[in-house]
Amino acid sequence: MPTYAAIMDWSGWATFGFVATAVLTAVMAASQMIGWSRMDLPFMLGAIVTDEPDRARVAGLAIHALNGQIFALLYAAAFALIGRASWWAGALFGFVHGAAALTLIVPALPGVHPRMASERAGPTLTATLEPPGPFALNYGRRTPLITMIAHVAYGAILGAFLQPR
Image 1 (cartoon, rainbow, N blue to C red):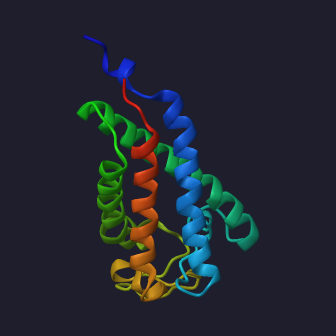
Image 2: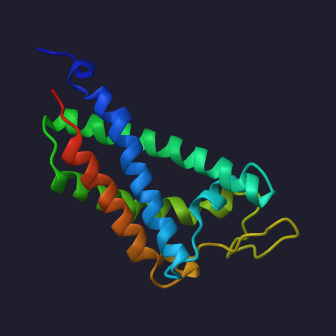
């Protein structure tokens, strides 16, 4: 019986994790550019490490790319565990991922982000970002929909192209 590591699609993970993350990021950025959402994920993530907006975006893109690869590794592991991958299974994983992002990850940011206001504690002298609110609705009413579309696309790409052995 092959080991778990032998059935992982390592090259697919590295390649398509990057592609899926780029698509997710592009969907989120495009929605911001056309005014459907005000959530600037690279800025939000980068502002954790620096208060300079331009550097925050660069740092945030790097953090987001790393996070995308980590999540892609989790998807690849899940596909290896179930022994197959498909676009629809990936889309389903992406739906769960997006739902977790909107209900758990993004709402938790004010608790760890040094420059994000909290809905419970309110703004401080160092808070420069508004809190995301439930389902990130403070960043626009279309933000949850766009976030879900981006995550479903992310998962569908990984499911379509990862090939557990």
